[in-house]
Image (tube, rainbow, N blue to C red; front, side):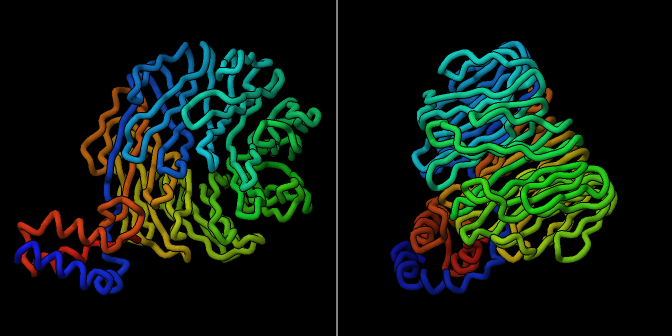
Length: 495
């Protein structure tokens, strides 16, 4: 069959064929690129975001030396913070390090509509983000810093006292306001007066303006430990947080009491910090909310891990042994929509979740033993392996894949780009192959960063359309018969 005839077929029948493609025709995400960063010491990535151009920004910590593509960055002693930016093809744009001989870690990262970057985490000793030297008041202090899209320092702040305070996550609302959550012992003043822990670690929640000016701040907890792990903002600028708590606490809707060890919580506040709703989940043993995402309708998706049993509102979920992963969806008012658990007698945990432009849910984390997300059992190759799983808005399985070897690997963060590419990052020892060749750790734990695209999305624009068919035909016209064309075109499609 000649090229002209194939191109004619593509022009006439592309729309019809695309409409007839079954959703199940895609067997998995297509590897686009994957990278490894690190040396014989330990390095890991804790947070990631994409901007409107599909560029990828990551943050975490490193010990030793790491080169993201712009030349070696050397730790000043203990853990140093890294901040690195790549284009959508994984090419290095710029990278920075911050820290001294003590420990500094970047935990949270968000990008605004202009591509500016806001980051949070904790630091001991001294660190300078570009606006002057900060000195910790004692233990770990919170930092909050803003950078331009080009990586230039705009402003930075630090908060804390002689105890430990940590910024775990940051989000930005549609007006550009910055929301941070985390944990504090002792006291911290974010600009509205000192907040003091009731004992142990308490949750803090604070909103700043785009310029770093304080709007409001709150803390929640009692003499036990409470931790804010993650924060997200919906389209109406309502704020969602999740994490863990022991003892009792009140977000404003009445006291939530832990039923055993650590329970998980989910809470919503208005943009002004007014309580909307809050819930606690758990029984005996530990349950932890690790990550939260919000879709365009304001529905809330949360993931984490649990031992024992818990009920999100759809019936009791029971762990099969150790820690199992959970995934649950609620509407904007906190009403349960669906919930699921995955795992066996070993440990499994959801670390991060994202909702893409089409409403599909993507999660990553780690698993030991066996786990089945709905597409058949995945078996760990040894210790912890990485998983990547995608579900439709109703929780139906779309795809799931495992990556790793006999050593430890874990996914710590997942994101969806504006073109619905899936980005994942984490750390690994040993080796891992995401589809582009084996990545081998230099020793200890190294960082991985991987980009996947939709099967059949040959122009990488986030959908499968007539132009993808054109590219497919153009690539195979000289070597494919009509029958081969018909058979192979069925692989086009994205979950």
